[in-house]
Length: 486
Image (tube, rainbow, N blue to C red; front, side, top):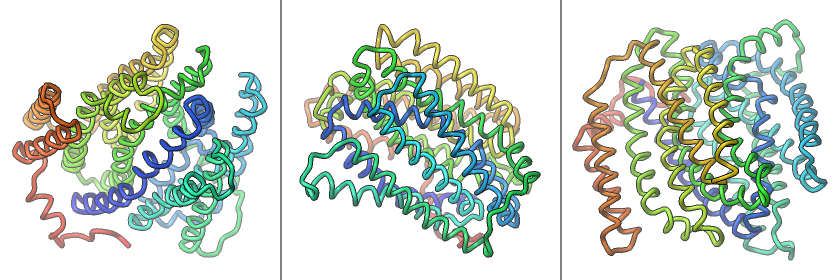
C-alpha cells in the first residue's frame, strides 16, 4: 500500500507542480498586481463569503461518496443517478441562503453582481469535485490526477491571453477573472461528467426519495465537519473586510500572504486526496494504517518544515519578489501564516485518517471548538491588530485542532508511542530553524542562502532516517502490487 500511495503521489504532485504554482504565482498574483489590493480584496472577501456557505451545495456528499465508492464500487450507478438530483436541489437552496445573507450584510450592486458568478462558480466546482470523488473512489488515480489540474490549466490559458496579449483592447478587470473561472469550471465539469457517465452506463435522473434521505443522513456529519473547518479557515478575510474601515485594502493585504499559505498547503491536500480512499479500504479490510501514516507524515513534514522556515526568515524578500504593493505590511502576516502551515499540514494526515475511520462526531466537536476560538480571537484581535491579528488567531486555532486530532489518532488506532521518530522530527525542525536564523547573519543573496538551507536540510533528513532512499527506490522497483489501478 505504501508503494501504491507513493507512486500515485509522485504523479499527482508532479502534475500539480507543473500547473498550480504557475496559476497561483503567475496568474493569481499577477491579477492582484494588475487590479490593485483594494479590487482584489473586494474579490477575495466575496470569494471567501461564497466559500463559507459552500457546504450547502454538498452537505458532505462528496467525502461520503468517495468513502462509500472506495468500499463498495458497485454502488456507483444507484448513487450517481440520485445524487445528481440532490446536487441541483442543494444549488437552489445555496443560492437563496447566500443572497439572503448578502442582503442582510448590505452588499452593493457591484458586489451582488460578482457574487452571482461566484455562486455559480461554487456550484460548478462542487459538482466537479463530486464527479472526481467517483473516479478516485474507484481507485482511478491517474485519471483523477489529470482532472485535478484541468480547471487550472484552462484558466491559465485564458487568463494569459487576457493579461498579456490585450486581445480585447481593454484593461483587465477583476470581473474578467471571475468570468474566466466560470468558463474553466464548466468545461472541466463536462469532461468529468462524460468520464463518470461512461463508467455508470445507462444514465437517467432518478429521485428515489428514500435513497436520497438515506444518503443525506449518512453524509450530514461530513457536511458539518466541512462547514466548521471552512469557516474557521476562511472567515478571516470576511471579518477583516466587514469590521475595519477600508476593509477591502486590509483583506487584500491579508490575501497576499494567505495566497502563499494556500499554495503550499495544496501539497498536503494532495496527500489527503490519495489517503482518504486508501485509508477507507484498508480500515474496511482490517489492514493496519500506522506504517502508511508514519511514512506519509515524514514525506510531507520534511518539505513543509523547510519551506515554512525559509519563508519565515526571508518573508520580506519573498514578498518583494512577488508583489508591487503593501509588501512591508504583508510580510509579517506571511511569517505567522507559515507557522500555521506546519499545523495545517499535519491536520491533512490526522484528520483524513479519522474521517476514513468514521470518527466524525469527535472531529466535529474539535472543529466546533476551533471555530468558536477562531471567531472569538478575530473579534478580539482585528480591531487592534488588523490582518496580523487574524493570522495569529489562525495559528492558535490550528495548534489546538492538531493537538486534539493527534490525541484521537493514538486513542482510536492504537498507534505505538514512536518517541524515537518524533524526537528525530523535532531535532530536524530545530536544525532547520537554526540554519535559517544563522543564515540571516551572512551577507549573501537570500535565494542562494535559502537553496543551501534546503539542500542541507534534505541531506539531514536522509541521514536521520526521516526519509529513507532505499525505501523510496524499492517503491518504484517492487512488483508486489499494482502501482496504479487503471
